[in-house]
Image (cartoon, rainbow, N blue to C red; front, side, top):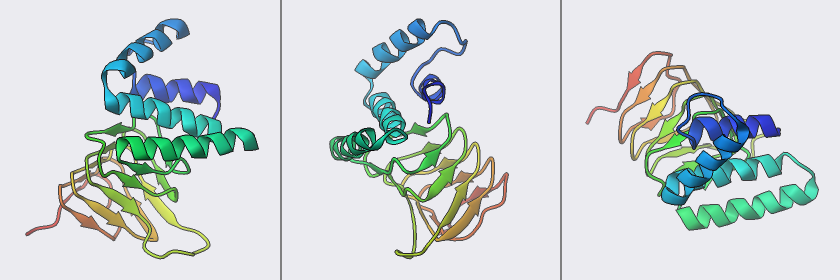
Length: 175
């Protein structure tokens, strides 16, 4: 992750400015917003940790320590290894778990007590892919080693997902 990517993430996730404008105005807007909102503060620091993690070994060490502190403070477990596109939003922080083996597209919305994880520990590679514009309801669980969720998918609350979901689908588990 480079500095321009970090600014793009902050602009789409933390700032409420739609127009590009000056970088100083954007940073000022972001700093005002993170003072008032816990979720925005977490997203700001999470992206900063991801930025540090892409640097040298000292920065990576600091990023892992920052990740642990953020996870403890905010009650989440989102790995900085996770590849999450810009526009990442969290409805409520507590209980959100995202593995580092996932690749998530743009405009991803996740709600409280939701898990995205792997099924089998120790495999050489995992293929968890979630497309663009995906929304996941509260208390949902997505567990698999190989899984593909398409674009524009809505997953209902209290859903268990362990199979592929095609694009443009609304998925939920009936009672």
